[in-house]
Image 1 (cartoon, rainbow, N blue to C red):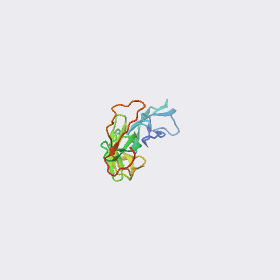
Image 2 (cartoon, rainbow, N blue to C red; image 1 turned 60 degrees about the vertical axis):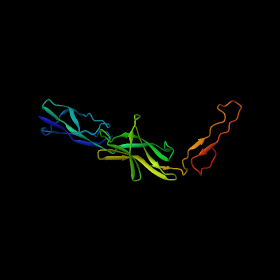
Image 3 (cartoon, helix red, strand yellow; image 1 turned 90 degrees about the vertical axis):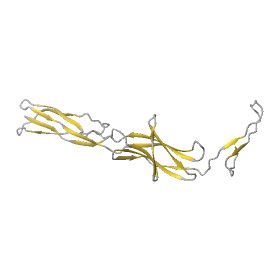
Length: 212
């Protein structure tokens, strides 16, 4: 009897499978098996990390003189850092017009081989906020912003003990102060083509200047 044993292999998530090899034992010196040694393995480069790994099963060798036992090996897929991209960063007024905020959007490319992501956050300096996953597959979040300040923001994704970060984006918040502009009532209830209308407006900021 002869035994063909597949060698154990390992690789990181996202990589192609390595070349599979095997050792043959219990052959009489000078003897060899016929056929072509082949392998089957269900793992592809997109296969997730799996407890116990993936079977590497050798086959394809034959012999008229030996009973052949094929013994499987194991392919171990290791997790890598998740990949996340910061897709949008913009400065807007809060809904009550009281101040400005930075609104962020990010897309998770992959979880590094993990079955699920643990958390996604947006990071600004020493401050972070937990992102919310929308129905469109994007994560969103926001920070309060001060006028005339530059912020550096990035997205962070964690799966298990692996964390990946996006590129950092700098956002400049202009020094303009938000104001609420109110228009006075028109003296004309409707506009007629050819007529003119004069509108008056006031701001909630006493020192505000400009044309409205």
